[in-house]
Length: 94
Image (cartoon, rainbow, N blue to C red; front, side, top):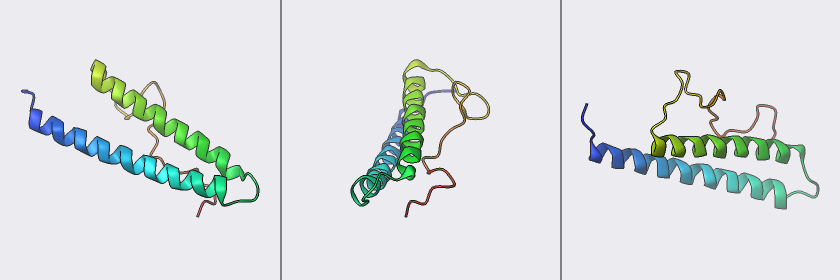
């Protein structure tokens, strides 16, 4: 199979768009939980955990891209399932 530089640019643009969306969503969620509440809600801890997992997954994807490593068949890296960036099911972030 031959490398397609045009396809590579498309993938890179998609990845950048995804990163921008993830950062924008996390920024809005952190701002709401940090600055629009009189107390520190438990959802903030969940958001920190979820955001951390998303950023670790993104870090692994970038590293694989540069070092040519492959994902496992289930889409996980280093035995961790991929994280979609959404908060835990029980959180009440609105």
